[in-house]
Image 1 (cartoon, rainbow, N blue to C red):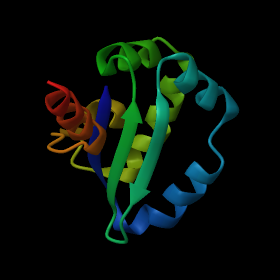
Image 2 (spheres, rainbow, N blue to C red; image 1 turned 30 degrees about the vertical axis):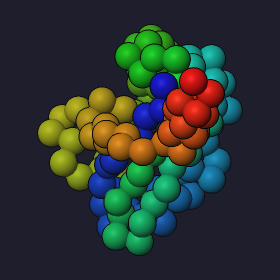
Image 3 (tube, helix red, strand yellow; image 1 turned 180 degrees about the vertical axis):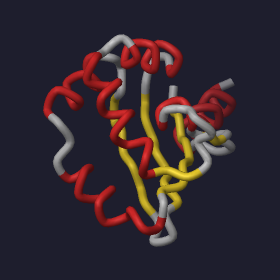
Length: 117
């Protein structure tokens, strides 16, 4: 499962947000890997729009696994002050999941299957 999501970082906190992600706690990195977060990347626009991408067998299971870790509770508490419009939700629960409308490999595979018939 490929998941893309969006959050808005407060413009006045961009530099600190970048610094925090340049040195993520080792135990947080381990928890993400152990709970199904693979090929995980964050992309930040100059205006604070943050786009995340992760591959996981199940987003629901990946989020639930992280919710069971103490390190995630600490990380989310610290990171929540960096974001706009969370309405009380932790960042890992307040993001907007974007709809995937195109994936090259899927279309190439479908085309290959159709031409073999």
